[in-house]
Image (cartoon, rainbow, N blue to C red; front, side, top):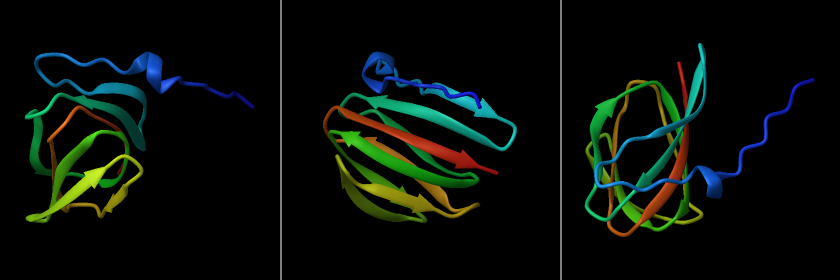
Length: 100
């Protein structure tokens, strides 16, 4: 059995323009690391089933047109096809698992 260990602290990179860092991608899933400065955002968009876990910071997640305040320790599940987006209100780190 193969095991892959990832230290998220080593992978976290913040930049002037947000770019997700893909930790792992396979045909049936993708795991991006999301590192955002205050004011940066991912515009709302539809996608596959998504699980988002917020590691540090705070932000607002928009799911299906509804805004949800998120912070470290929160987890959000979004169904396939549902629109989702994130805006950081303070330096924010999260990871997501996107399926199908």
